[in-house]
Length: 114
Length: 113
Image 1 (tube, one colour):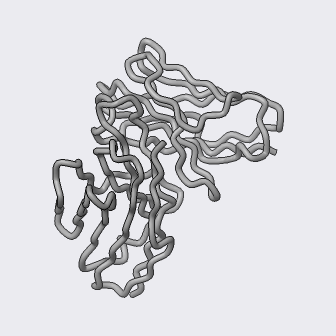
Image 2: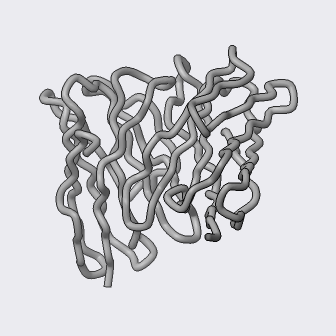
């Protein structure tokens, strides 16, 4: 089955700086890669996603890049703000195939220092 | 509010017991997914139903089972509970099968004592 590795497990950045979280996946059949943000005690919420036919996607301060050959994808947050503090999860799945459930990385605890 | 409703929010039960967690998906969503979140294992996919039928299985124990009813709500049954089953159980729904945004419910926190 799919295996998703996520790094780092904790990331502390100064407010206003950029944050980068990286993930690798193992199953070349995976073609859908969402990123979820989870605040303490709350549900995961989708912040951005990318499909394998796209190399990069941007939404305001958030961007995701995908390298299919290397099987890795990254989340970039620019101009970080205190409300960006949360745990971020990357995930992968094979859409349209047999196993549609998301395989998640272990999460990155992002801390924005004032 | 994601539109996905899970009940109960909290559940405390003893080892060996059986519990049922309930999930109502967003209106119009046909897929329901169940996930288990624990500190050591992270978010783990358990099982998926699509329009009433089992679609995919993940790391679901044999003591656990699920079903999706004609009105599309889903139930996750956990039996012969062990201390290690204590976790946050999330239900998510999406319009169709994989590759579309999955919306998570608020979760059910299960504590086995």
